[in-house]
Image (cartoon, rainbow over all chains, first blue to last red; front, side, top):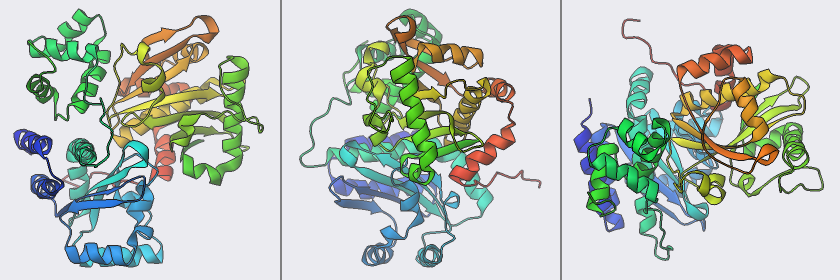
Length: 239
Length: 211
């Protein structure tokens, strides 16, 4: 069983990060948290600039770039212009170049298993958030089942943070919550139950769930309690 | 049968894709009188078709289009956030676990099973990709179709009246809703799973510890 507080602590550190180099440290912390061999974040901007951080062997990273494995890697082909996360086993590894690539990746310690989250940012920005590991299929399937949600979330938060470091990035109001979301978070902070909040706002609990989920994502939070704490801390809500 | 196709895969299914965009022109321009753009080939496309969406399409036995819908992640640009914020209480819905569903379209005279099969395909997407909600933009006739197949969304807000009424609504994944759709579509879950896996690859199933 993973530790929810440890995950929140990492998200807090991610929120505080003020330099690109801190993402490297965070990728290592996340690898340890998920107890996987590797964790990698790789971004390509609309203009084709690349940035990456993670725990792969630098020799492998160098080789990947030199050999232009971007063109061969089934993970890239399977994620580019798509938006659903993929277990590497769902990809097509049957071609000769893909098989040779996989053998080499495994030899460099990447592992026989992987899971990648494609992330679409503004203006054609594209990123991949990946964990890889060496284990049998059942163990991996179980890991994905229990960790998928956290992997998808933290992948997106990682990307939002990386975007903040872009030099000429237009300031965005993305973090701002709408008045309705502020109301929902405020009532939750006051200790209202979901049913009470929904009732007070004259919306269904189902709709409220979606508003809370949206607010939580904008706040970079792990769960609702964390989102309420963040909203208070940022002064977005006052109770 | 159901096809799950990303925009860059439509080229391999050009007749099906053409039929879909033509049926969209017929539904949205001709039947509903929406202010949408139809090109010289008779196809209706909008700016969101340029954002690499995922299409879920019912392909008839002759390769033609029976019905379809279009998905985009709400973490990127969406029609709801750019055009229908007034229908969501001003909330910009954004989450990797909520996908937007737009341009739900049926070919003229489509059997009711097709709409149910499309919705069932939607619930298969939710199950397979960990999506928890769909946020949809739909027209008045579709609202009746959803009700008929027992897959009514929760309506967040509507604008216009009569045939020009446009609404934003929510669907959640529930096993009960899925079971209802299985019956309405006249398809088994196993068949739908097969179509899903053909598109997205097979995931190994978790075997029980005693097996």
